[in-house]
Amino acid sequence: MRARTLPYGRQSVTDDDVRAVDAVLRGDWLTTGPAVDAFEAALRDVLGAPHTVAVSSGTAALHVACATLDLAPGDEVIVPSLTFAATANAVVYCGGTPVFAEVDRGTFCLDATDVERRITPRTRAIMTVHYAGLPAGLERLRARAREHDLPLIEDAAHALGAHADGARVGSGSQLATFSFHPVKHVTTGEGGAIATTSDVLARRMRRLRNHGLDTDIRMRERANTWRYEMVELGWNYRLTDIGAALGTVQLRRLDANLARRRQLARLYLSAFGEDEVVQAQRVDDVDAHAWHIFPILLGVERLRVDRDAFVRALRAERIGANVHYAAAHLQPYYRSRFGHREGELPITEDICSRLVTLPLYPAMTDADLDDVVAAVRKLIAWYRA
Ligand SMILES: *Cc1c(COP(=O)(O)O)cnc(C)c1O
Image 1 (spheres, protein in one colour):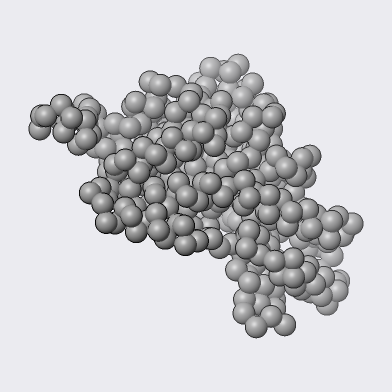
Image 2 (cartoon, protein in one colour):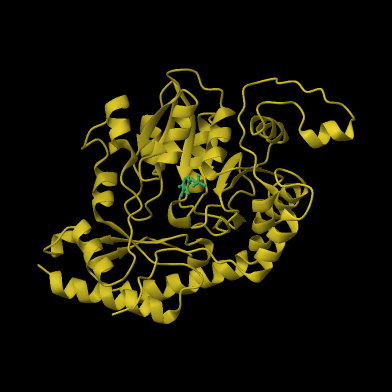
């Protein structure tokens, strides 16, 4: 057995990263300043996106993106339930109602056919999540959104560096949000960003991240004026220069990071390809996927234990397995506030009862991965019904 538990994900921080942060700490700007400008430019280059707006978290990115919808009470936004609570919460922050939709059984991504069924005269937008880093079905979701004249918001927190139809996720998006939490591909400590093709939306989101003020402090300094106008209600969602400097250096390693994640994913896929108890995500192109996590579905009907007991057993083997996610619509808040119940989303609920996330991060070695595969195989043999 391993001496120490293998985590399911972990940041990589190098001496270059430390030096970049050190330089900011010794300079004139700690909060949003030149390092944020540089980070936004580097992110634009990496994504091929016309505009990027850096904010203080992936959640803030979702909130600001949703705020551009100008929702009224009773307005609906369609979201998958197989996601982190933050996706749906952003709709609620803006006074709207999340309408939860099913995901595809193979890709675990939002099902465009189910979305179509849930569109009503109150629908104001569709939000999708590129689950685990796979932008599956994006073209079909875009087509649904276009037909109904609805904006499509992509929660791309898992999908930095992924491709859909040959283009990088975020490059041609009306609104795509990213997270720079330490467990994601690139970190700024806490941080996030929105990529958009619209200069109108970009300008508005810059305002919303800074209290709804029409100018920021550097613009006022350049114009030699103290005057500002608050033109709408915004928030303090500014990213710090400290975090941005870290993120800019981290972005330079994104391609190497993605290459290693893809190598590890290939090893997992070949290890479990023929296994009747382990179902991996259905993926057409391993290299178009960003592999934030490696989820599997357990064939619990072939086992004497449920998923939770299996995860506990993996952890006892010092494999830091995790679960992404508990269905959002069944969280106590969504049950009591919106009256959701079991049985509403049978596909999502089935998937959520069988999902296990196996460790995957760039610094993980092939030997680490062999330990994970051996532990999963050992437990399956032990618990087989
Ligand atoms: C991480 C994540 C978020 C939130 O990002 P934070 O930076 O932690 O606020 C939102 N949605 C999904 C799918 C995520 O994985």
